[in-house]
Amino acid sequence: SQAVDTISEVAQGRSAGGGGASDEGGELARQLGELEARLSLAGEQAGDQGLEEQLEACIGGAALLADLPGTREERRERIVEACSAVREAMQQLVVESSPASLDRLGQGHRALARQLRRAAADGVSDAFLDTGGPLEALVGAAVKGDEVAVEAQGRVFSQHCCSLVEASLQACTVSGQGEGGRMVRCAATQLESLCPQVELVLVARLVARCEVLVVASLVLVAKMVLVAGLV
View 1 (cartoon, one colour):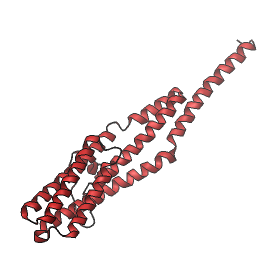
View 2: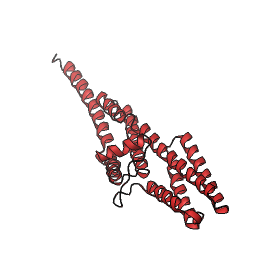
View 3: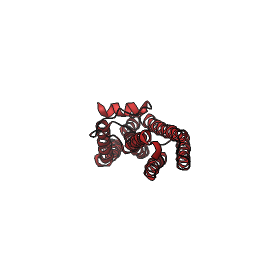
View 4: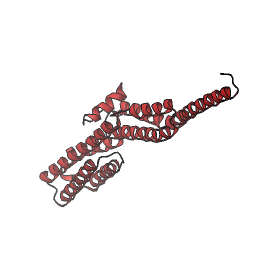
């Protein structure tokens, strides 16, 4: 499906193919694309205020992505370095509007975009490495009737759902595939809302309690039978 294709593209460190006005893709991907187009047409007016504001908007979006809990520390550092480099290149362009300065800014812009795509790829790789594990562990604890383990695995499962949603939205924001991104965002929103609403954790807890109660009841009945001399 397109949703899976979008995440797959980003997981491989590539921005999914863009489209027309109806297929604009993620916000950050759109901002980076507009900046790249403006740089290619900048010419003598490369250092104007509008370009600088557009660049700062891209840097702001990059900073938000870098600050996400799922972003790896080393990737966060590289994004910060790329933001600093591209801002420095912009300042140099303002001082000296030359082809060399413009080329340096273009290189910085491409380096920043590359780091953002890789950050999204990292997030998808980390979150989707073992999608069934937390659920299987939760169900396993419930089947065993281990209420303490169910409580612990319930927290792990909820956190895993949050990680899946975060990684999916992170992939969408740097993807140029609008329709696929919308499908992924829709699925992520559904997961985010269904995780607490379905109350899978509570159902598992109930199963665990029922298992314990059934066993306790059977033991009590056995004792009553023995006491009554029926065995």
